[in-house]
Structures are given as C-alpha cells and as structure tokens.
Length: 323
Ligand SMILES: Nc1ncnc2c1ncn2[C@@H]1O[C@H](COP(=O)(O)OP(=O)(O)OP(=O)(O)O)[C@@H](O)[C@H]1O
Ligand code: SF4
Ligand SMILES: [Mg+2]
Image (cartoon, rainbow, N blue to C red):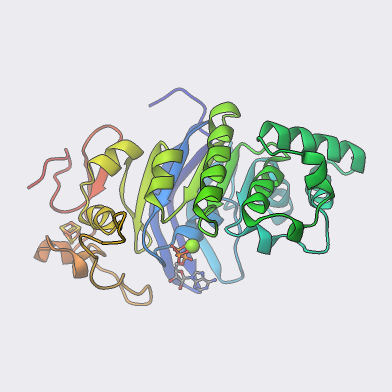
C-alpha cells in the first residue's frame, strides 16, 4: 500500500436508478496525478459512475458504498457542501462544450460566473486576467480575443478547449471527462488530448476520462477500468490491459476496433443485458465464447495477474493463472 495521500477512494459503490441497480460493486483508488480511463459499450454505466464522482444525482438516484474525495464522503455530504466542492475540488468537462455554453454570454462571462461561485467578491477584470493567464498556460492563442467572443464565434474544438480551461479556473484536483473528444473532428481531438496531457503532466491534475476511443485512453491515461453491465470486469495499468487483455469482453472490445480501411476483424455479437432483468453470475455469459455453466452461477472472484492488473473471470484463478 502506497503511503502517498489518496485523492479518491471509491469502495463497493452501488448506484441504482429508481431502485434498479445500474452500477455494481465498483471500487478503485486514485492518487494525485493519476489518470484513469473508463471504457465499455454504450449503456454499461460509465456516465452514471462518473456523475457519482461529483455526487450529481436526480431524485431517482440512490447510492450505496463509499466515494471519498480528499477525506470528504460524497455520499453523505449535504447539497450545499457538495456545491462548494464541485469546481473547487472536482470539475467535469462536458461531451459537447458548444451545447453546454450559454449562446447569449461571452466567454469572459462564462469564466466570471464560474470564478464567482467560489470567490464572491472578485471583479470582472481580475477574473479576465486569471482566465487569460490560464488559457495561455493551456496553449490557447489570443486569450483576449477568446474572452470577448461568443461561443458561436469559436470552432467546436476551440469551445471544447475553452471549456476545459473554464473547468480548471478554480484549480480542482480532479477533472472528469465524459467523452471529451467524441463530438470533435480528428485534428480538434488531438488538440484536446494534448491539452489534457498538459494538465496531467504539468499541473498534476488527476483525471477520470470516459471514452469509446481506445486511442484516446492509451494516450491520456495510466490506468483503465473496463466496465460491462455496471461492473468493472478488468482493471489495470493502461499498458497491461490494452497490450495483454485477459477478460474475454476486453479482448472483444479491442478486436472490434476498425482498421484504417474501416474493416472490423471481429465484431461483438449480441447486446449487453438489460438492467431490469435480475443478473446472476457473470453478466457477459450470454455473449462469451468461453462461457461454462459455472459462469451463470456467481460473479467471479478477482484474479490478480499482477499487483496492478485484476480480471474478474471464472477462467482465471485468484493468482491470475488461466484454467
Ligand atoms: N436518470 C436515469 N433514470 C433511469 N435510468 C437511467 C438514468 N440514467 C441512466 N439510466 C440507465 O442506466 C444505464 C447506464 O447508463 P449510462 O448513461 O451510465 O451508460 P454509459 O455507459 O454512459 O453509456 P453511453 O456510452 O451510451 O454514454 C442505461 O441503461 C440507462 O437506461
Ligand atoms: S466468467 Fe465465464 S462468461 Fe464471464 S467472461 Fe469469464 S469465461 Fe466468459
Ligand atoms: Mg455515457
């Protein structure tokens, strides 16, 4: 166990929507500067889990388990304290910044409103100076012009990069990104990835990045969690998981990446199980080429392939050997 301060400790987290379990038994630890990627098919609970890391929930959402951010237990904090924490300790980059921005307000106003949540008395000029300095550090050219602009005067890629700067204006320790590059063209995607890398490497910001793009995950993260039907089924250093995937689902996800001509060598047949049906055993059993009767009985125990690489599969012994 590292003696480093733990930034985020998620333990046995279960999230239900309207009483229906969505995220189940999720645990992981982040240290300062860690970047965790979360991958998995559509509907497997990535956004639900990510929103919980800011304690964002609707009336139907219930949590069980623990989400401890820098000593604060998010599942128990009153809403007022949570509002303070959001932006200050943890911030979220939206999937599509342009849609998230108010079209009637300049970027200067956007920064100002975000800063004011945490520094009530701050003057607009001071906020502008702070924003321009941050944008410069994040390699955004001509910050003064950006501050004067309305969102529709900026490209989609620029809006995304500006929104990342807005998320960082109150210096949060943890940045959450839900598909932060998926609405962008390839060159804007690269610029956003470079900006996030800069935040990780130069500013030591910790991140949790949800993405369907395994290339983005490979470039940005040092750990990865593979989610299926609301559970983490494989977890480890990004390099180990992407180079030596051991869970049949992770293998299938990697095999389903199209090559340069758009060809997919192996598709993944079927769809994930629906959450309203009771799930017994391994949730991947219906689609798994290696499934055996034991797979339908209980969720597998953790198989430790290394100190950092964990796989939940009945074909793996607890010390990480394949049966
Ligand atoms: N507010 C809600 N009320 C009821 N069910 C919800 C709610 N939000 C999400 N769900 C259910 O939770 C499941 C997981 O949704 P979630 O958005 O977390 O998946 P995801 O992995 O982020 O998918 P995608 O890759 O498509 O963004 C979905 O099947 C959805 O039906
Ligand atoms: S536990 Fe069984 S069904 Fe699940 S991934 Fe492993 S082999 Fe496949
Ligand atoms: Mg999502």
